[in-house]
Amino acid sequence: MNQHGVADLTWGMVLREFHRRGLGRELLRFRLNSIRSSSQATLVRVRTSQLTQDFFAREGFRVVQIVPSGFGPVLDRVTMEGHCRELERRSSQALQAGAGDILTTSSPAGK
Image: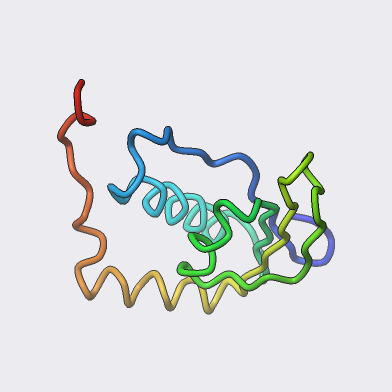
């Protein structure tokens, strides 16, 4: 966390073969819970790409800046932020609705 109360998330990835199983959501929620319990952060920031921007938007993050090709050719750098209280509220609502039960333990297709 920096002196302005901003916690930055970096490099939380899930292998493509494990996408759409809830692992990314669980990883993100674990990280957000860790930030809440160990700091006084009021804002969480993530720098991602247009490829995963929608994932973070569904979890309550908002786009604050887009740098075209900011990570390399045709890979935009998308900076997104979420207020800790709002992210916590959304996470709690999702858990109450049963969204935390979507993890599967089956192996990827063909494995």
